[in-house]
Length: 451
Image 1 (cartoon, rainbow, N blue to C red):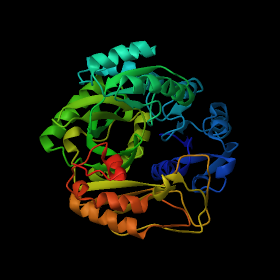
Image 2: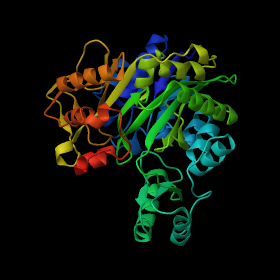
Image 3: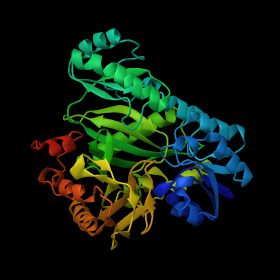
């Protein structure tokens, strides 16, 4: 086991990792920007090192500063959390070359799955079905138009090195495609340093289903069921639940087996998430793999009783998976709401500043992952995630009732948050019935009746 882990992240995920390390008897080092000097992860870690100014490019994305902090503190491993450098193959490579263990997959794994075109190719060979689309990067508008007309509109442009909805544009016509192509290229270049795009047939109103996997260094692979992440806005997940209300036991077994076989085929190790779109007929299509811990991992933890962050650390330390597939049981239902510092009544504009009063819900089966406290100043430099509220019930109906109650208790004053908006969503008749899709939020905001 590691003696000291440097946590190369901030906010709630940094605290989540520090807690897991403490329970494993591992010392921790927090790194922080000048804007985060009063953040809780700095207080909770055994040591802390300032790595730069407020902008992420000068701190949390500054590889040399992070490696220097690890060397100065004699850290033998680095946990990247999610976002920032979590899926940066070069960073993982640097860690490896410096003799510091990267808590995650190999740089080869990250590079393979980070290239969405290669990922599609290798997963197809491994047996996963794909949405019809380009086999290589689309270089010109003319090439894009030709392929779009073969596929039939609507189509979606995606960044080859994409993630988080960046470099994505849905196109319903030639005119829209021509206008979107340059914009998507520019956004992809700015976000990932790679402007290349590919095209897929766009599925109308699919479900976004993802399968949590874990693989060790000895060829053992397990899946921990699925999560339904269809409630999204601008390709960003807002509400997630596990298990999905549309997946039964037989289908879960089929999807899990198909996914674990593909993971074995690519020689992956660590925890990870394989993401699919499911059409109205129940067909699944691979879209991408995330080679890190997910924001929404708590709902899987709640229904399986397995600590995914600890599992990730144990695998990186060279230990075998401590549980076999046949021993994993799905129990109850869990739902997560991402509480963001945004004003839903004002086009989701960011809401930053001083938190004068902060109170989070409690009670049986309510979990809160957050770095917030009264007196904390929310900086404007990073994403808007303040907290994750997770509610568990013996069934989905009970979990939703607990979530509604929990959301009603949140107080983060005077900051505007998405909590009241989520109450409207989870109390919508169709959401209660489990009848939703990736276009649900847009239809809700536009006043269109969801079907």
